[in-house]
Image 1 (cartoon, rainbow, N blue to C red):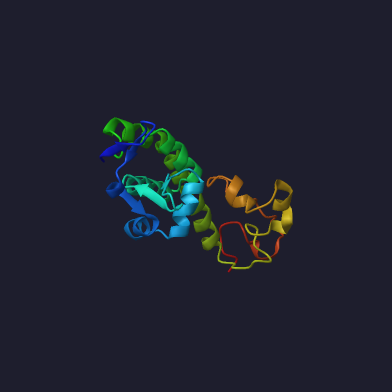
Image 2 (image 1 turned 135 degrees about the vertical axis):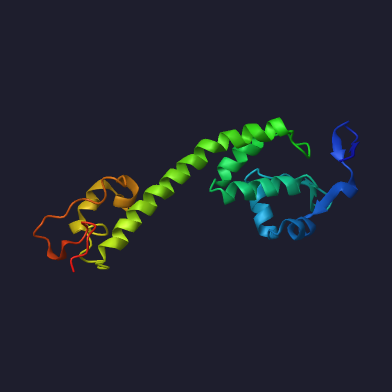
Length: 183
């Protein structure tokens, strides 16, 4: 991108290298409201015309693509911002800079994969039970014993796939939650 200098000697993109919010929205596939939100979070940056209109450097398209890629792998917008803060503002980070960001994401992605594997194992066990009862299911309700552990789906959040749901006493109706159907 070619730059010009203003009266104070600060380098600024040429007017032809700037995109309006409408043009950026059309090129990026995001709504203008999403672009303004991204700007409020510091993910992208705009300059203002004398009339107060936003103008974005063309390199903003690359930053938006980066944010969307981060979201696609399950990273939050805050995590994307932290990664973008490590990259230079110039239009194209070097391969080494991209590699550093990718390496920082690797552990986060590995954690997500492990979490999804645990969820898959638990859901398979629950589906295999066959009870389909929200009132009797030891995984879903378990006499509300899970409430003592805190809010949310405690069995999905805290138990490993090897230990499975909390065991149900043998005299419980239907034997639900043992991983076997009571049929």
